[in-house]
Picture 1 (cartoon, rainbow, N blue to C red):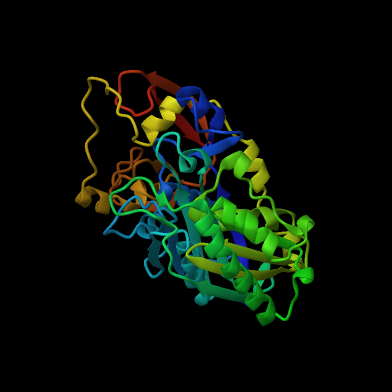
Picture 2: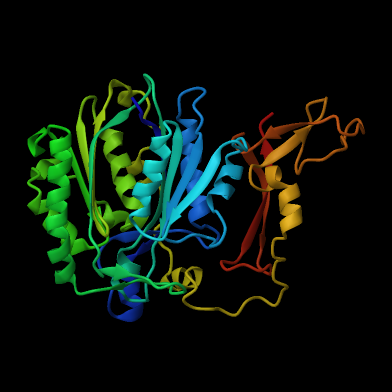
Length: 419
């Protein structure tokens, strides 16, 4: 039966303390912190990291037949973002790559696409932001999660039931070109969502011939905090089965959040447990999964909680606003970097995205790839070798306070690859 073979979670290193917002603006903020993607990260790069973790933990020989990428904050429009992830993972050209973007519910579509073929990779990634001092800014978060689907004895969780309920109502929206969402009055969202959640959960349990008492872990999530809290009470779940939403530590990560909470549950689940994932987004989707015996041996070495703890939480609010494009600082009086050009990017795809080098007959690796051996002078006697997963040590580094950067200074390192 098709199910989850492996999963990977990526959380950015930086955290913004919500108290920093209050200190700067005198309002907003709150308690806890939110995860913040750095100035040089986007949903695509975070998705690559999550996917690399998932593939590293996959059974030997398991490879996706399609890559499905979901986000509300794509790096590009009119261009498939999943193709950059495909290139960074060095997947064969026969593997498809598609985007499902634009709404939190896009994550369900990516999972449906990846699981339908029996061996797909679903990547859910998001960067959440809002106007300074607003609820979305303080309570949003950035993260990426990847699930590799397949079948066989190494499946760690299988789907045993699903129910979707769709409704059209204007609760949250963002028009093209806007950097932030708008939201209707909170009581309206609660009024609209709770009956949908009750129906979706009841339909999913009926399809699986289960009752709520049979469910060991219940995840209820969505961007509407008040509706989520009301739905938790309305669906009849026992309080001790409700999974923590992690928003105090990292914020609500939008499209990635249902998958992030599922990964957190899988980190501690035992065999033959039932998990319900209830997502409120333009209706309600309920997924029921059951863990297998393989769950105890196929977890990632680093858990979600470990990644939450591995952080730096002293990011200034000014830096956060700069990274988000909310304020524009005076740049250094240096030329801006050249923008990428299409033809050289195409010629150097393996190097630019997959970090491939060329190895000559004597075993010397050239980075970037070269046609001529530095040792023997032989031409075109090379083989391509992937260096992205090869361990390396920082030999030395420089700190440049003059080079152009949104987050100066620029640090350049010389690294020594093992072997």
